Length: 133
Image (cartoon, rainbow, N blue to C red; front, side, top):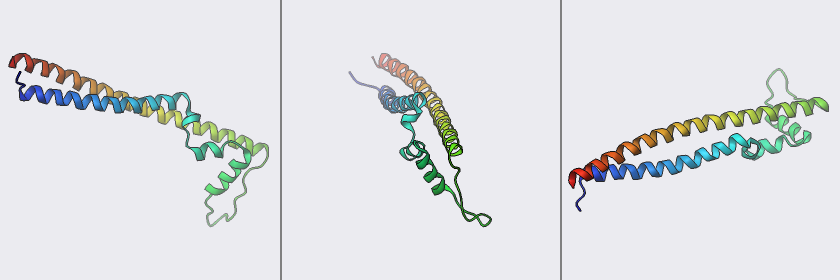
C-alpha cells in the first residue's frame, strides 16, 4: 500500500503531538503535586530556613542588604521571630501553590491545543488513506 505525502505528513504531526502530550502531561502532573503538597516541592534552602527559629534568623541575616542609613541588622527575637517565621512560611506556601496553579493552567491549555491538532491531523490522515485507496 502506497502512502500519500498528505498521509505521511498527517501521521508525522500526530507522532509529534503524542510526544509533546507525554512531556507536557508529565509537567502538569508535577504541577498537580506542587499544588497539593507545596511543602514537598519547595526548594531545600527555603524549606530548611523555615524549620527552626535559629535557621530563620540566620536566613534573615544572610538576605539582609545593609544600606547607607542602617549598617547593622538585628532580626526579631523570641515570639516575634517565631511569628515572622510562620508568616514567612505561609507566604512561601501560598506562592508555591500560586506558581503551581499557573503552571497547571498553562499546561492544560497546551494539552488542549495539542489534542485539537492531533484530532485534526488524524482525520486528515484518515481522509488521505481513503483517497489513496
